[in-house]
Amino acid sequence: MTMFQSVEEMTNALKGVATVMTDRVHVTRPGGVPGDIVDRLASTAVFATDPPVRGTARWLIRSLAAAEGIRPASIHDLYLAMGRHEVSGFTVPAINVRMMVYDTSRAVMRAVKKLDVGAFILEIARSEVGYTEQRPAEYTAIMTAAALREGFRGPLFLQGDHVQVNAKKYAGPDRDKELDTMRKLIVEEIDASFYNIDIDTSTLVDLGKPTLPEQQRTNFELACEFTKLIRQREPKGVTISIGGEIGEVGGKNSDVHELRAFMDGYNACRGGGSVGISKISVQTGTAHGGFVGTDGKVLKDVKIDLDTLAQLSKVAREEYGLAGAVQHGASTLPLDAFDAFPRVAACEIHLATDFQNMIYEHPQFPKALKDEMYAWLREHAADERKPKDTEEQWLYKSRKKAIGPFKQRVWDLPASAREAIGQALEDRFAFLLKQLKVPNTSATIARWVKVPELPIDKDREIVGAGGQITAAERKADGLAD
Image 1: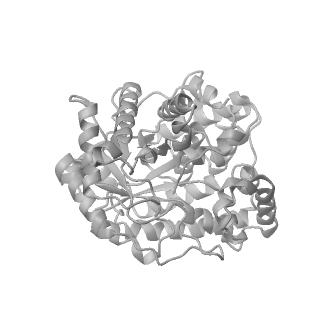
Image 2 (image 1 turned 90 degrees about the vertical axis):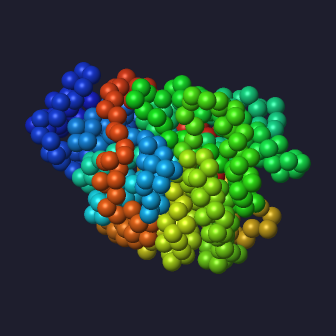
Image 3 (image 1 turned 90 degrees about the horizontal axis):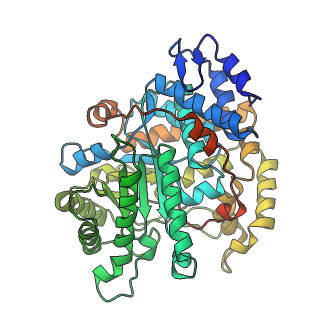
């Protein structure tokens, strides 16, 4: 896609549609931004080499979208309504957009628009920020551009998924540095209008301790500390939706005793008068990326403990007023499994890896590019191969690490390939949305969610556009699905 080369070129391209002033954008023709202009702004917001040009493109995208009613929002009030049994019957999908980001998010927007879906989340995990080379401000701009491009109107629920403490760093001499990194990421996400943040300190649960409260102590104490930071930094008029987590995905299945130990400790630590979490993530038998066979294919005979998920959701709602339990690691499950989640009243489900897989495996994805990405992995990610991994297993698990270094190459695939892959993704999104019972939820969102009309800070967008992804960030530890 063609980029703009200067701020003046962007301003001139918008003449007749919007008047660009020093600190604000006045839209003179609502709904009139040509699609190719949005495409160019999106590409500029990511790949322009000059930070002021890159940041101005992000500011223009967000300003143009805000004039159309597309603004970031918190899902907190909807989730509290779920906790009061005033809203039910659907599971909110939280979609991690990793690869071919603009086209993937456009496919999401087409699907939600056609089905009148208001209850959906777009998210990126701490680890994904590194290996996909997308800082929060960039992610916000591209999700917003996709909504503007496809004519979606309504609040965008942008979420920091798995804002996760690295257990090894926490246990070693870098503990303070690791916690400071977490704090900085939380602040960066709030500045980028992520009004939904999932705190994941479940990596620090110590099952070797003799009692449940002792096992969960570090988890709930740090979750409490980060909650206080979020409440201190959230904008006026916004109550950020915060998630907690009691069991690391891929580990031991959670139970209601652990849930109570975490929540009782967290609430005591938090004290009265402050707002706590709105949902709780649990482990019920899945793994991020799925379970992979020796041939590099995802195994489909995964046994999810739906009874436990239902019980955890019930206790979370009835005893603690939360929306319910959150299911992670779900995108690679068999397609006939998804209608179960609304039935057991899971409030949210996280979906990521299968959409990445669909792109890699699509017949229109160039084989030569895929081979080049795999060759890059053999040179740069060989140290991540476990002794028991076959070549196919290792490539499947590690290929997400090639997304960032090849971001522009994938972004600039031929239009025919992007359209074909985008259509396949749209069809999959539409199927999942139907299974999760979220069609026709825009009215529910309008009833329960207050969309803050906050100013869009041009200087902040430009400063945010100056950040560069480091090699260390690309290798950041963490999980996402």
